[in-house]
Image (cartoon, rainbow, N blue to C red; front, side, top):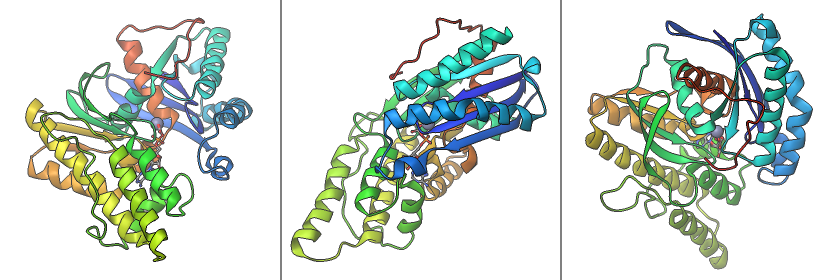
Length: 334
Ligand code: KG4
Ligand code: ZN
């Protein structure tokens, strides 16, 4: 079955054609038009600007995805679109576009949860991968640990109680003078510093839980920068980036180790924009090797927001019997 995926939940307009069936999974096209240059001026995503940019881009991005796949709409067996969570105005652009396209061409439609779609990127990157698996989804908007029993059966067993990991990287990155989104530049800067330079509190919540809190860590990093400013000494930027990265990486590693022991899973999926972090990838590779757990981390191109992962998840939802209609709505929260 050929699935057309549409993604507009934040600041990437994306469309993709993915071939999915019980024997194979293949990305035929995955076009991502990023708006980051537009939002960089403001240091973060401006929702109203994001919605307008999606409206301008969505038709041509979809046409490009179809053309690059070598297929036309008449070959498409399913339209999948991110319906939640995300910026409501941005989501509505994709949902309404997908509804119109599906209705006008008499193609089934499925609205997709963006967090589930991030995890589904792993099925595309590793065509042999089948759940059950444990999953860490870490992005600009969410940080949570799930038990995935089937591709449509997710149980959240741990999550952030406040900010998402990506948001924390972006906020501290901004104070370090890194351009939005700060993730990739932060990753590189961390190699130049001493990870013990700035003592920071762990975002792993103490005790028998699998939860995180990034607010204390963020406050501590901000206080360090303020103290340097008040004393008139230059901050150790690379040291802060390295210490911050190590603190976050260790917290995820600690909770994932606990989650793997608790659940006994032997497959671990790591997905979402922050899964692109090279320090986190290396640390989790070491952990999983030591615990004899198979680790599935999509390549960088499938970690950030893209429509191929949405198409993949839509296929599983459809296979499980889900159908949406012209009354499909978007929701800012999951
Ligand atoms: O999944 P994503 O593209 O969008 C959301 O669904 O939120 O994630 C974007 C986030 C941004 O906060 C970005 O700074 C972060 O992923 N990110 C990284 C890295 N690359 C992207 N964070 C840490 N290290 C990276 N290498
Ligand atoms: Zn995302």
